[in-house]
Length: 361
Image 1 (tube, rainbow, N blue to C red):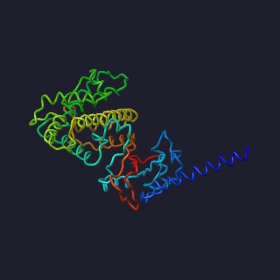
Image 2 (image 1 turned 90 degrees about the vertical axis):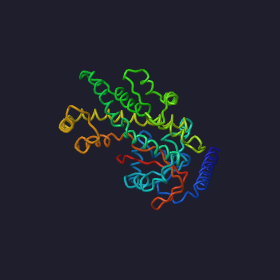
Image 3 (image 1 turned 60 degrees about the horizontal axis):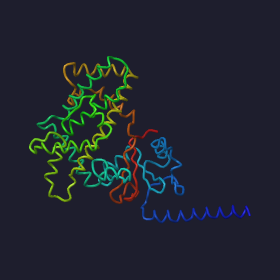
Image 4 (image 1 turned 135 degrees about the horizontal axis):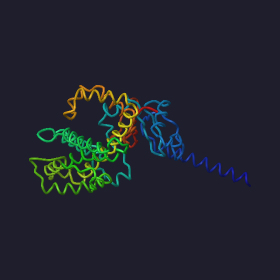
């Protein structure tokens, strides 16, 4: 009797696996010639082969076995991984138009609703990106440039750091406030004192704060003299108000503002914090950077972008800090906007793409 139960159980398991394989093959039929990759298990795919505490390292390890372009399955989701400089450059630069799709992530769709700079797709993303880059660039034409805003905030940051009187302290909040103030200056032409409760609340949540600032800007908008990013966006909204297909509306503006904060504040703060830590660990490097800055810039003015070519050692140190800390090892998940031929493979539109920006295990 017991033997019969074991046989029945084994038969059920075998039939279940066969049914799964049949359904899996049928659902993946027509996916094109996908890159090679590890064999997936039923239901869980290749999840057992990934260290969930360090997924980038696991993906890099698999790339050594299957090459810079390979397929794996996150559960039932077909995923193509791009690893290595050549593969990433070929996808994002040489075939950038095909690889600019953003993956649908349900929890993000509920909050972002396809608006803004991060999670919009296709023409909407192109329009927002082009508008934002042109607006930031044009701040230097007869207005306070982005560089001037950064220089001003750098002076406030230095004064705030001096208050520590050479005693140990955690600079994270101060650096966050400085970075946040630069973005505030760009978005709505305003900065806050580092102890201001409004600034601290802004660091916790920005969407409704940006909307509040937008409504205030609408009351004082001068189309001929835009003060900041919000004014420029509102002017563009006015220009396109008769266009039912326009991507320029209040919800998009609020989301773009939120994206600029989330992309700029945390990453810049973390990079600066790591930079301070590494310069403390390597005082000889710190001394060389200090000497070069004093020699080229002196003590009477702030550094500017024109000094870049005269500060090769300092620039090399900054690049090495960013390389060393590997702040964001991979991009947000991408998709291709259409079935795409990549090298000798065909990547279907519905396949998820993981693009590794860091290639070290």
